[in-house]
Image (tube, rainbow, N blue to C red):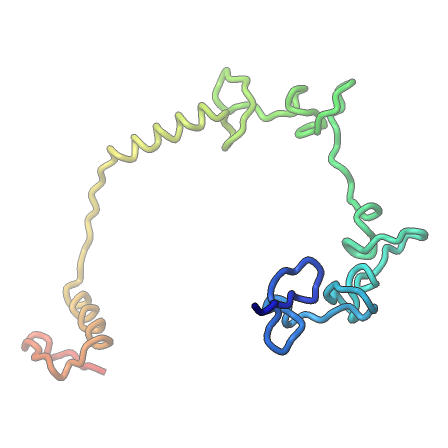
Length: 182
């Protein structure tokens, strides 16, 4: 029985490629410059743990940069605002209030006080409106009058044939003899 060698990198159970110390997945990746480290390179020939990623610019913070020059702890943006109703801890949606305390959009249907969720309507009204629109479209019938210039139509058909068929093999009727084919 032959023993198969596993890939050099941490927790990789893939077999190495012949004549290499890395598997197929890790073949283009380098190993960290620090001796004994089995992580792959992130930047500057080092893994993230050994300095491949810059550190947060806040003094005494040793976290890695997340966005810009700050870590996720120091660089997090403003948090979502909370409802201003006394004692409420829910997130504010509209007018600094949560849905329960008046920060909701009203349904557009007259005399409906339910929260609008889809297209300005509550779900039930939105579904009914869509069903009505679909049934109205089924019964619509319209007629269209089109004036066709027969000469222009014939030329359009011929120009389509010019691009797709060798016209030397087609005998043209005498009515089309006045056309000049380019």
